[in-house]
Image: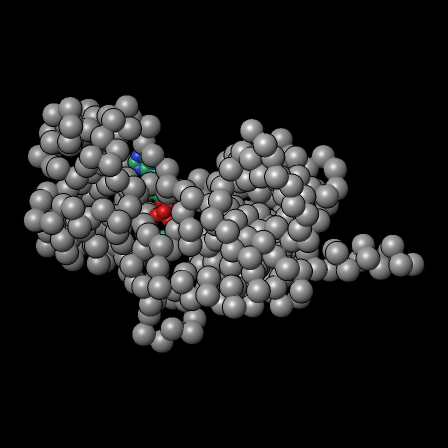
Length: 318
Ligand code: NDP
């Protein structure tokens, strides 16, 4: 396969709030940023509904609309936004080498990693088998298909609570499987779940197997992890909401990470262990994971990249 090569000053990988904010700052600093969107252009917020906690929107805003605003602003200021997926990197020398869609080689003076995080799965074979045929990790994306039906959701964090509430408006009944005898979700979210008449919370219970007819989901086998009692729920939709993992696999072996794959940055900066490579957003943040904190670290990454390039230029002149 022929390989096309291009040299850029600043390459941004990922198109969530972190990537677009980095792009806005990098473009205004004349770094002529090139941004590759990844497969889910706009990132996780394109899979959500109402965002009420992003400052500047007094009446709230839909996640996809907000990401369109981010994109438009980055484009207007001069970011070269491209649809493409980074398949590998080589950070062994400068400029850094980044391969897009296995064919295009980008040589980048600076790289900003803003690849975000993705949903976790339980790991059941039946979950894979029926993924897209009754199994989903995004209630907001797929809830619509289960209008008037009975569904189950697994998880007890804020995402699960939010998605259960969302599903309760569409579905006849929502079973919520909580593996311990308590929620992890915030009190406000939990309160909403407990006061929704068609959500039934089932504590100390896990999904044992998703049942189906070979084509679509027809039920769920659950197990109580205290009593080992098994039950079958008649459901047609099964939603997984048990957290996320960072999208950092392609950087393994180059960039220092913690044991769960979150990129390690120098405290108070977005600098990684590799010169000229910066990380921001959920790919390096397992604590806050908010759109506004991702945007904040995106801004930091662009400023760090700009200062790094300025210091290098200064060193050459001196
Ligand atoms: P969390 O990591 O907070 O919660 C994951 C949940 O899934 C936990 O309850 C966990 O159980 C459960 N879980 C994990 N693995 C399994 C398994 N194998 N089987 C059954 N249950 C399992 O992830 P969230 O996505 O909910 O939230 C991530 C972050 O985003 C949090 O900081 C949250 O506050 C924030 N958030 C904020 C929102 C908002 O403010 N509007 C909305 C959504 C998320 P256990 O408790 O037993 O560990």
